[in-house]
Length: 233
Image (cartoon, rainbow, N blue to C red; front, side, top):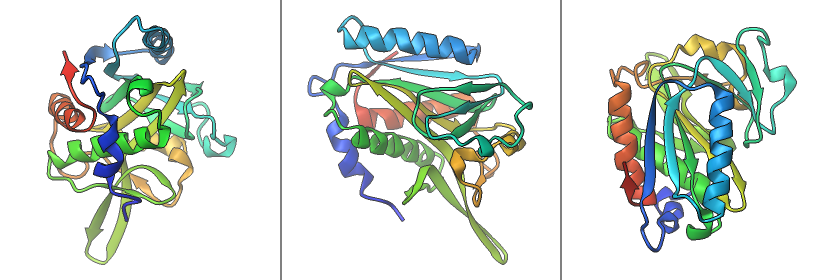
């Protein structure tokens, strides 16, 4: 069940001045270390009032990241892909081709200084984007991310379709979300995703929605405007 009404939680996230957020999409694959360095620089510039907020969409080559709550035993295949220790919230996550990563650098000084509200807004953003494809998704008490219910003859389960992990410095957010469009789902098998072993992982294509990355980006852009306000780019 939903933890709380997402629309109410997200309503305070639009800037009073509605200054547009820069929207950037990188082609190809971006190395994780390069992405973190770029985010660090941008966050410092936003905090200093020298740069606009930014949402950065990209894909990474196959890798695992470990958030501040990651447990070593949840890394099931240490040699499979590079492992990056990172300061974002959360546990182990996989990134790779076919997964849309969106790094979200927002000035919470202008958006309520509410980290919990930011996370709820990110959830609402993803859920709204999935709704563009007719996919019903939601959040679950005690489980980070966005989930879908799956049913078949004699079975029912919940799978994770998007992950969330953020960090805030000087009230500017970075890191963000990852939405599974068409990744290799078996690549998640090298970790316990977000420390949750009893549930699976899915994607738009796995759900029978033949979405392209461009279509996923368009859905994310439309939903972002509804939750966070104006976009430029």
